[in-house]
Length: 97
Image 1 (cartoon, rainbow, N blue to C red):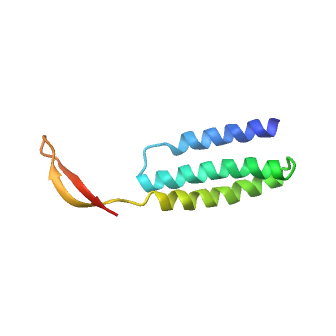
Image 2: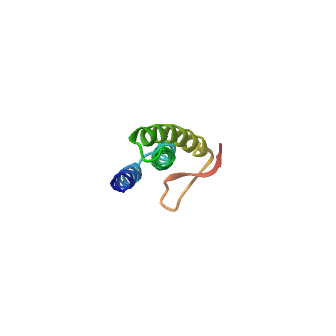
Image 3: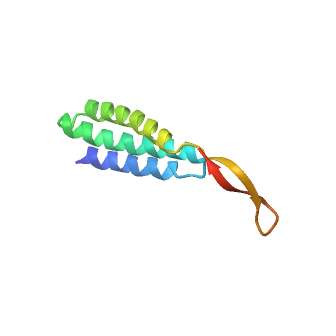
């Protein structure tokens, strides 16, 4: 039970730190890695009967997989057409991927 609480606290800490102001793709990669690592650690611990090795292996595998998925899902958007807002600032009004 103590291991599960420690893993849950580590997951909450990782997710809260990964929500800092960064670029969109970096945020997707960080959140995907953190959620994947936490989920993988929980599943690895449950499957291996509560051993630390299973939790570590699940965390590593889940972290890598989650980071890859998070990076693929949040591809950067490029501006196709610029315009101006009411204050005269240049803004993007149309995007392409």
